[in-house]
Amino acid sequence: MGRAPVAVATDREQVIAEIERELADFAGTGGVAAKHLETGEEIRINADATTATASTIKVPILIELYRQVETGEASLDGRLRVTTETKTPGSGILRELSLGVELSVHDLATLMIVVSDNTATNMLIDLVGLDRVNATMAEFGFPTTRLVRRLDFPAIGKNPRNLAVTTPAELAGIMEALATGRILTDASREGIMEIMRRQHHLNLVPRYLPYNPYAEEMGEPDNGLRIANKTGGWTGLRADMALVEWPGTRYVIGIVTEGDPDTRFWAENAGDRLIGRISRRIFSHFGGDALRAETPPPGPAEL
Image 1 (cartoon, rainbow, N blue to C red):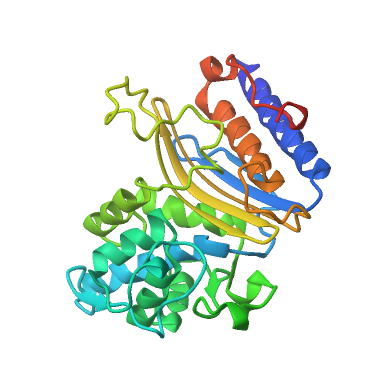
Image 2 (image 1 turned 60 degrees about the vertical axis):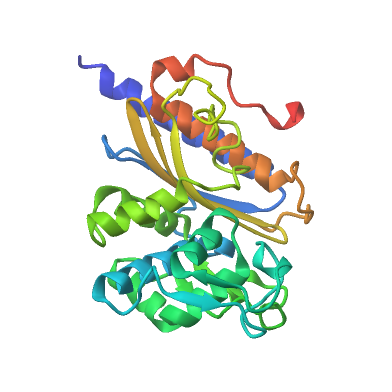
């Protein structure tokens, strides 16, 4: 009984040391914050460093939307039309469709998260108000997380911090607030998490986890792993924020890498793989001895 705390502390220190080595070998910089929601144990490396958000800022926009739905200022059933002013390049599907396409606010919110649609994002920023997003983040305890402007690529230029900023700790903290009921109503939080669980971009935190979002549709066994996440990608930058639920464990994670000289948007991007490996180490650590006994995450030489 007396030796158990020492073993746990040593194990946590070993995981932190492994992640620090991964980050030291990375050509850019990175930070991570993860918290087990049952035990309170945390893994933090560069967790409070200010970083760009890329598309993870879309979760605070979604939170502000649901907050305004609660107050009656917005309706998920309202309908908005794609215009020249809102249509923007980058990720998503609305850029490929005709001007004048009309969708419900709920559909736009879904597109903003599950395929990271930039046009849908601008439409929702215009609906809820940029300043309102920032005020709500500050009120909820996330003062560093700030939306600077709409998705306007000429105005943002080469510095993604001209779009929005945050910290890994605040990304994880936002997910914790949603998962534990600290913000919004039960109905709003469930609406947000239901959208986030339908995420199509699974190349970061879920990358090396035993996660199959299509198991039920394909008639395959359900292993019980649930992930609600939102990724972000920019030239040389990758980010993810997630709630990971596995039988016996439940935790949140916020992770960002910046300054990667590999600027390609491809499956084997170094930042993508690094986040995947760090995520797998944290998953194994929080998941218990059975998971730690499985094959370890692949190292750089194996990918």
